[in-house]
Image (cartoon, rainbow, N blue to C red; front, top):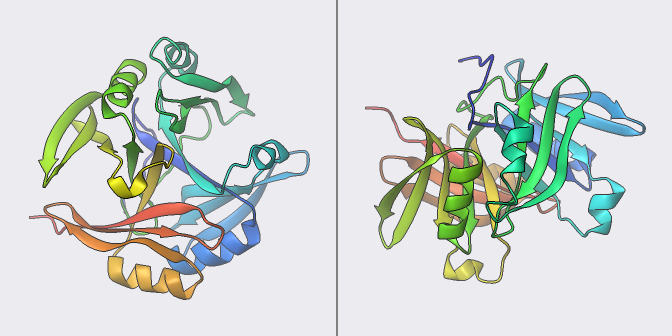
Length: 262
């Protein structure tokens, strides 16, 4: 198990679940991934539940606030990308065609963040770490492994992230689909694809993937726990086996069983 003590600029470093039923989510994910949960006060009447794998922070969850509920925001996993200077990165958003939902603000003494949307409407957070780096464990069973954008305009979204975060784009053909891998230097940072015909009319959105040891077994267990299969388990040559699942409250996430290393 590799422990991370910092994340470089442009890294998918954290995710948290905003949900309507934290107790239900705790039961589902605790049984599915074996997470240990620790409730932490995060303001008047607010609790932020930290989820850990092997004693290392992996992600978190919280009850949606009144504003999110009023907006009709569904339960969802949010992606966070580490940046060196959140104020400087956020200033680039509007000029790149995006929208700033929340200007940079301090999260107590743990970090500074903003909430943004790209030109196609996909929402994400920019994170500048202080005491909280984000995930201390990644690409291990139960930990985050990948972030993927399904968008209705790959050209606009691609230009946005290369401008705001500084990623480079690497395009590859996967059957009839062109898949974009965003890179920070030589390292892979995140993925992007055009929405499929089945997704027509759905908003552009990021999907969080968690690593699993056995994709098919995890799908089966998720359904037994009250979840729902959104995309059944399937193989990606040289990458692994993946599936999309929704939890009992409706939050969608991906799971990925990495292909054996050769």
